[in-house]
Length: 263
Image (cartoon, rainbow, N blue to C red):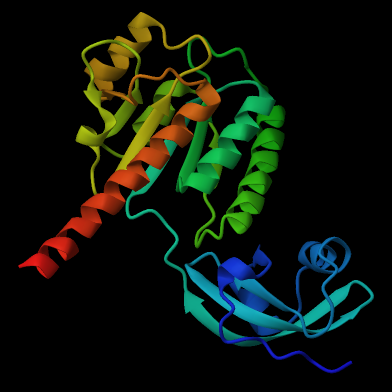
């Protein structure tokens, strides 16, 4: 079978994408789980193009050379650095919720650009897991994050971690620590955005207990912020906030350029 030439116009967004370890690039052989996806799910064949993401921001373009047995070999034909990440590092701390809701949080926040996802039981969380179950869930959610990051054409794959203590989780968060809040008199999210890093804190279905909220504000310096007039479900709140952050930062980054062109 003759090899098809890869069009110069193809981009990472147009090709099947897979995160791989950097050493895979020099081996020329796809990992078994990726080879299975390539052959049996996407049904790619010799000469087809794909994009390999090394987790450092680079997209490597490859062409399949052969698919024999369980092995799939490739050759590299080019690379480019992706610019698909948010201009600010955002860490999301989500109060532990039921598994199906937590998986939705992982999918949505990964697609929206979160760099790290932390889960921990708050006072009103319904879930309390053993160490073994927590590890199993974490591995499952990390796999979901990887798949969603590939689909979203992320340059980086976010890390997912389930912690056993809420207050230890908060201590890990970068500042400003923005507490998504429905109480009156709090500032809009847009007024609290830092251009380097920030964290978003989301409560469980029943919200935070009053004493819990006060401790986060007084002892840990968390800043209550509002997402606007709508009240959102716990599994969609961080996603909605991330979308607002991207829109606000995109506008802010565009303004200096617009001002220079009008001078």
